[in-house]
Image (tube, rainbow, N blue to C red; front, top):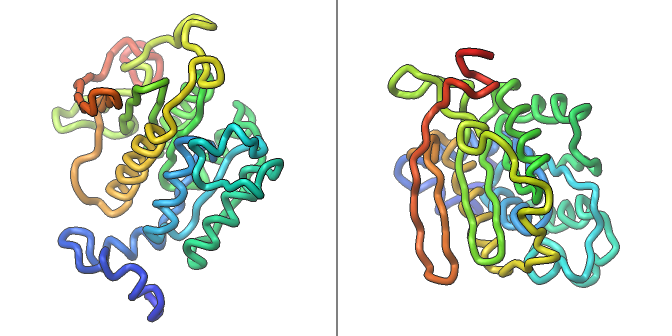
Length: 257
């Protein structure tokens, strides 16, 4: 049940067709894990907290630096030097005291990923490297957890939702991350944002879309981006969607696994 403060706080959700009170209750009961409290994770955490997600887990072993503040809007100048999980938790508390924060000040690896992912209902990946993206997507598949994953580079962003542990409308498995990207690019081919730069507001756009996807999944509304890759060109302000399918040769849920 909601107390009077929550009823007023979430009033614009509660009056929404499709979402309404039942959807808001689902958000309150949900546990969402956010990988990274950086450029993508910052808006994800802010909007999920404002939306009333009951428990937010944050995985990040980094500290706030001055160069982060151009895009990582959950942190502020006084937070420089502070662990990002602490800074993000404090910001969430200011936005919505009804949200419980579980801070994981660790670097995600093969040893800790299974237990972390299994403890949550939905995972949102805001990591900045391919190794972590593959680790998160593989772990979510094995744990049977929906994953909303995005990537950004300079002026471009992409986003998709993965539920390969479920079957699609045609009876075939939904595609995995490895169906979309079978192998990571060669080392050094894709420069980091420290080398190539990143438009700050781009991360806000893509992170907000990730939060929207997570809310839809939890509340059971709309159509998630399963089997669809949403691409955004910030310079042209153009969105494009590319469909992709299950690859029977993929190593996770392929026929030869």
